[in-house]
Length: 137
Image 1 (spheres, rainbow, N blue to C red):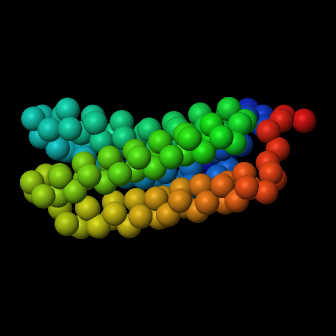
Image 2: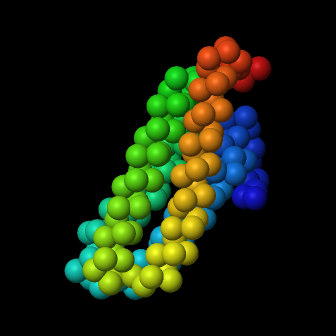
Image 3: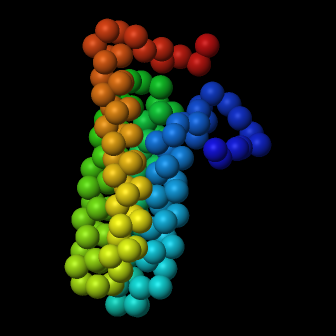
């Protein structure tokens, strides 16, 4: 688990397994695409942005301390998951990455995607029954 020197309640998202796994996914995508040819730089930048967007939107939604907004940002993260998967499939199809590299990616991507879906479902249940605290106290 990622450990921060400075802690407060607003940084609680770093404790979420899905956030930690999404960070690992970003690092894996960075590693797999690091040696792509120059002509693919724009596409690489786009999928790195998509991978990073998963993390950024999870954290932004969490920090807003509002369940409706949190769910909205988690759904944006889910959309970024789809964008990332499409980019990596494209790289595999044009042989820019190997089947083995794609498989490593896809295994972790699938895990993150399902963790996100489960978090969304869980929060939607809390929303239905009104079991959500949105204050810092």
